[in-house]
Length: 123
Image (cartoon, rainbow, N blue to C red):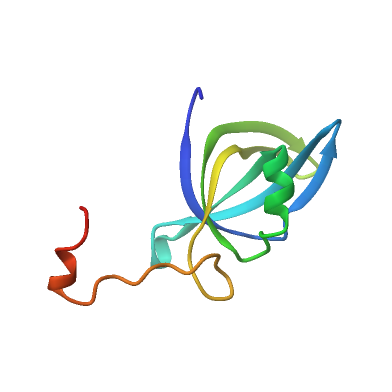
C-alpha cells in the first residue's frame, strides 16, 4: 500500500452494490467528524470495497452504521455542475463494525467495573 488512512465514521446513506465487469463493487459514503462544539468539522469520504467482501458486507451495512476503515487514500479532483472540487476516496482494505444501538454495528464491550478487574487485562 503506497499510503494509508484509518478513520471512524458513520454511513451517510445505504451502500450501493454494483457490478463492474466480473467484479462486485460496494460504494459507501462515510462521514467522519473532527473537533467539537463550534469547531466540529465533518469530512466526507467515498469508500470502495471490491470482490467477495463487497457482496457479503452489503447485507450488513446501512445508513447510520458506525464503522472503522483502513485503506488507501486518494484525493481525486473533479469538475461538476457547481464547479471544481476534490473527492476524498478510500479503497478499503479492512472494515470493522463499531458502536452500539440502532445506528451502530456490533455492541462494544463494557469497561472493567473495578480496579480488581483491571489486573486481569493483558495490557
